[in-house]
Image 1: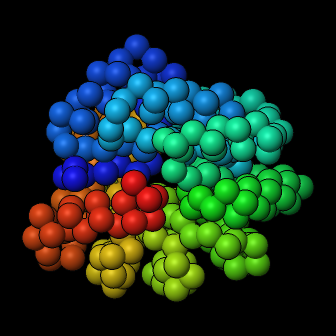
Image 2: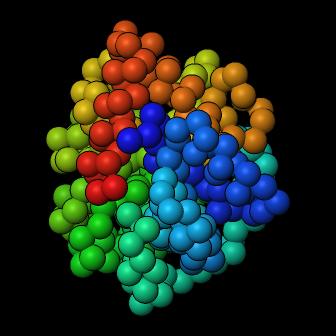
Image 3: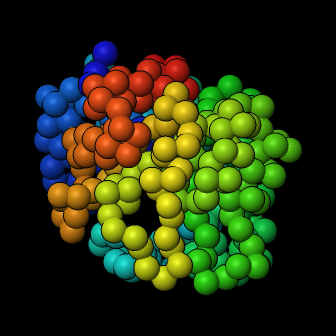
Length: 284
């Protein structure tokens, strides 16, 4: 059993094109398992190819991220790392179903809703594609890796509330709300429905600006350790003391350390519990 599991990383992205193998080997050498997550078909396929190169410790999740339903630009302030431009992709259920046949694929995602730059029309399309991926997850009996993000200046809609309603209506499987930055009430609602909550490097930062404040201490103190996971979302949002650098899976230990600090528990107890949680939800 590893010491750590980074349940959501993107070493399958082009940022790691030159040294992805070195990054993953560094993680494994530090007793850290890694789950690479696709955001569209090309990166999903790449995640599977990478996982197949390793006998143990590297896994894949395949799916279509909501921001990839339209062409758009995402800047450094938004991503917490380098900016990038997305291209529009239609969800091809048959193509993703084929990837899901690989034994290294442990979930579907990252899928969900992203209202950060999103028209009303695109929000409806995001919901439709999210539902299609939930149905595929039900079909293949794999958990969901869920992305949730609000527009913090637009209070007219709430992605956390919308996603929970959709999951309750359609999902027959469970999963993970990754990079959580909702409220304690949101977290408790998802946990009551059987979904785990994953925290990222943001929990090591000072309070965030532009209405994006999330009281991580309150949330982490008040939810059960057996429903908590940790993810780096590499290459974005590196935790302190690596903030401002390219993130990578081995840094997940800093997130685990912060969770232990907030819960006032021994770090060993927290990291062992998180590994058990990850193995339980993903069947690894």
